[in-house]
Length: 170
Length: 170
Image 1 (tube, rainbow over the protein chains, first blue to last red):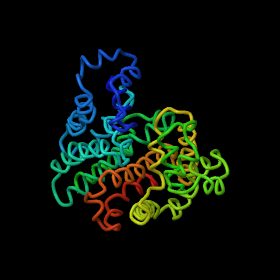
Image 2: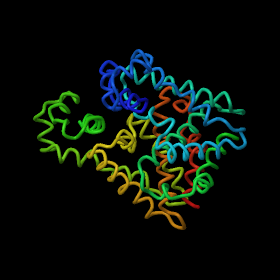
Image 3: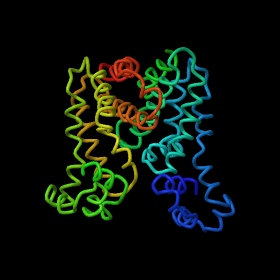
Image 4: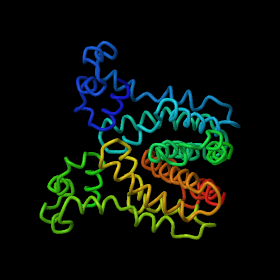
């Protein structure tokens, strides 16, 4: 249901999204959706919440955070067939509702990461780190049967994490 | 017109896209679109062509390519208000036409970069480099008024290019 809701809110203007449509897409009854979330607003708030993603991604000490973030992204892709952040990328349009999703993301992911960092240019470095995370998810999704899909998670971390770590520790 | 076409093909199934709709979105007459592109197929092929983006992005020797790619992305964002690659990210759905766009991208961007690289794990490194480029564009677009928008291009290159260069020269 959440996946269907994410899809719906990401690809359609908020006003056009209906609980009935999400239920149909998820293959459940509309009453089940209503039972779980009661209103569209509440469902949107759940979908737009990047807090759990931040909890997962940032759950490591700063000096090991790069590797932890890469492995978390790989695990999310391989074990849950999903990506904790990528839905914001579908929201890079100009609709009102998408602005809301972007603002949530900027606050819950980029803002929280900025607060975790130390040193200079923290906001700028956080934005670039977030870019690297979004890009990692995008390339996994784009090259679903590419070399990345066959690479060991540890190898992906060896290749990709130093860049993140460099921006974390700068 | 191209911008309107990109938007149309990125956000709607191919079958639903009409030249008339694109013309309306672009604020021109349908006959002008027809004059330029004659058919929807031809327009799609133009929009789905990542060749010019590859020409721009890869126009530097390997030992300076990381910096060149970052500066090219920054310039594209600031001078053309656009991104040469980001439209593929909107196509990470499962519709047929989007698969086509993804395949073009994989061939014209990732494949061409793979062929440019030397050394081991070229395909994997190219996929990760492409991820970093997509992520850079995504974070610029996401944080339109963020710290990145006020940073000097050279500073962005200093912070972001070493990661790319490391994967290029690995």
